[in-house]
Image 1 (tube, rainbow, N blue to C red):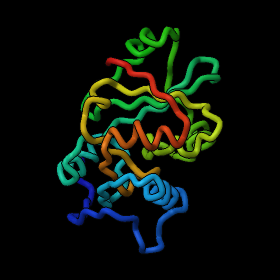
Image 2: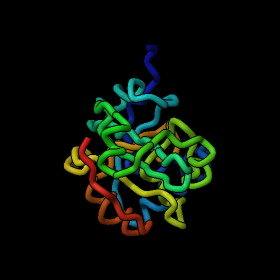
Image 3: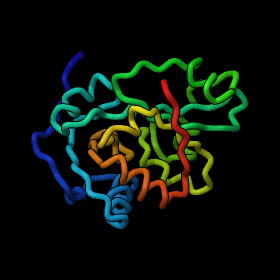
Image 4: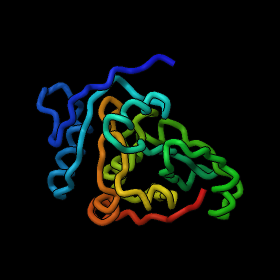
Length: 183
């Protein structure tokens, strides 16, 4: 695996270079509005957990693995947050949820409901799910961690945010509830 470039610079504010997409800037605007502090680092596109290893070290947090799933009928969608180093088995989650067959949702559903493309999936995309089509599932280990590492809806930056701020401020704002799972 080739290493990606990761800046040595940590920021606590939104980028000001004018080169960011509106969907990324909307994340920073919302975090500021909700008074949610964060640390940000910029890097080359990081669309795998392996690519995030250096980001983890520099931010001092384990990036969260964000999986966008659906039921067989494509009527129920889930965003699953698990530690980046945890192995995921669909059958384990299917059993906990009482759903016979879960699979990865197609990219068009990510864009439709979360305004996110593959490799950039993040809990912060729930800000775009105004009609609550996506159910949030959080692994107990993520919930127990002090911080969560995630992308601001683009995989060229990563954020370190207090888990309690995501739960108490961000999800309260979006209106999403979460279900705790143990994987």
